[in-house]
Image 1 (cartoon, helix red, strand yellow):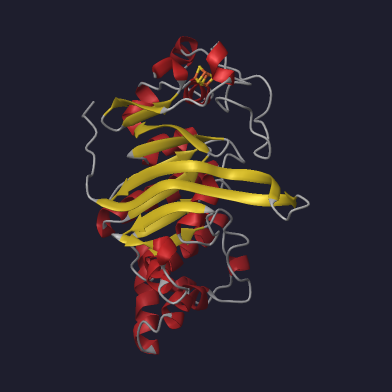
Image 2 (cartoon, helix red, strand yellow):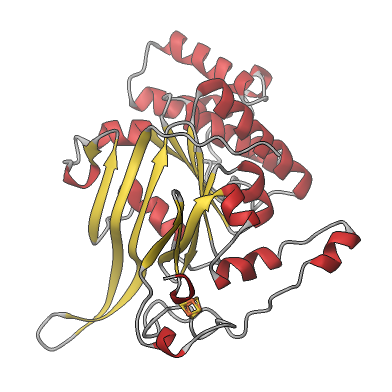
Length: 330
Ligand code: SF4
């Protein structure tokens, strides 16, 4: 197998990102109880790559994505996009970030306004941003629909007249309308049938190649993440526990949680099936309202040690891009 080529020009850097939701105040008006949705998350995304964030539902991956363009306001941390500090920007200055950082949402059924035609849906961001005269916008909509494989014959249809895959193609055309540099794909295929999932993943890959796009891909489905990613971060209870290139994570995982997640990927070949031992984790993910002391994973970890319940492990560098937070590898 060819060695994976890694991009090196930084587009987005996230440092020590935190998002806490206060749920109860004490008698002095201070936050007595908080939900730690994201707890000290750091990563870098390079131009032209697909950086995936994976983990179970409720691990904080979608909240992380929503913090990047401040759809959710982070509690603290630093977000540098295109060499600019996103959290220091005023509402007016945020417009350039919105233009360059678009989102494809999980559910194509509810993310499109049912009262709008396809033409209105795709032209909306262009009209809001005054991206040309009406004739120019109509031409741009036509070319975007061609680009996503729908064609201009769908211009006057309404969302209820489209299949799930066609709706998601409209969502992708909308996200592409303003020529963004970064697209956040938040579980973009999880609501679709398996055969349609493959078509949408192939479309995203083709568009990336044609347009030089950068993706942040949020998913709980590791088989899809393996297909599309250049690099992968694994999240557990609001923290990144391991990150590295796709090959490092899928061929040589270090963190016990990553190993457990990978062991759950279905394998079609019965011979290979025997060679992979399934690791079944005991219990549920603890609440982000009250994460356990020490390593957050110790309540479910099959190889935990005494110190695991005392201190949270520091992040260790395994190899250039491969990092893991686990006492076994400190
Ligand atoms: Fe398991 Fe300990 Fe590593 Fe946490 S630090 S993953 S509990 S071995």
